[in-house]
Image (tube, rainbow, N blue to C red):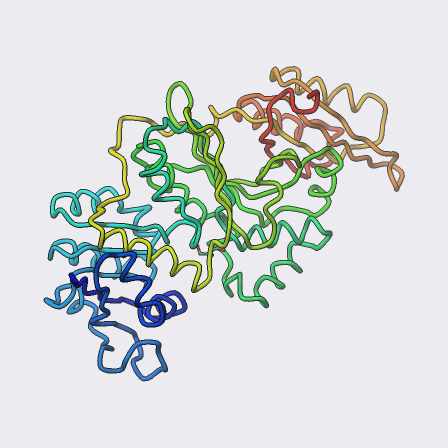
Length: 426
Ligand code: HSE
């Protein structure tokens, strides 16, 4: 049987699962690969810690591993931009296949690395970089290759989905973030998750693959969940919507929309039912229609499932999971169209409602529904509005004008709504 010699960079949670499976599931994996998969080297920071790799294979020299004669395929699971980008580049230069879970490197440097892999006729595969155990990269590159992808939206960050799910049950942002940290979903510094940075990296990878657009994450509009209030999630629920942090991309007439922000989805939408730390991606193709992938977006064994599948694909002779890029601009956020939910604190005096609706009319924004309750305390009131579809630039300008009204105490929330205008009339 042919041999494929694997070198492993990083033996943490995912690397440990990969190494264990290569031993414990050897027969099944070799049969699937049609080759003998042999772990020949592994690099870790501290080789004295207990590992799932035999001691004689362990070392600390990553530079040596990516050049080693006894390695055909490098599995990079260290994470972070550098030295990983350089190590992947060096491995490709030396004619080695690369399998990586590194979303940061692929989101920011993917085009150059794919070009290098193609020039060297070696594989650069990254199923584990987006949504851990969900197969979404290979399906987009291979199984859906006959489709023009029209839309893609996903819950592509498990930490924030855990938080917004718990907030929907009434928890505050601070309490549910602390709970996510206790359970090990959220990092001690949760910035990359809660500000949508992790999601924007993943969305950039998906947009490049699904639409063939040249994109890096700085072109993606990004708004996180740190300012969300449980009150808005509850009010949205009353109006028939569930809140999610989504990565959304859509093919428009003049380019592609790509954005990460909190979204109200109709409660009947398949993504609205994906709760807790799970991930899900919905893809709409011109031939296949809507398809949804859902499951565990993180975790050792789930992510190892994706890494091992990539190794098997390479052993079978499959190279890169990418589409050729084309000249397709990423649209400025102002040009995207959405509906919006507003919650506005106002003075409880006659004529306020007329002034607010006039601002929306001035910006050609239609009003779909309105919620106002008798206020619990004299003097102030709260108005909740749901608009029809309008450009982001109009919604942003209307928000600024609403804030300027003398009767407005504060625009407490503006949350974009992903639903067709006819949703509530269906
Ligand atoms: N921090 C990520 C998440 C997992 O919460 O989904 C790794 O991508």
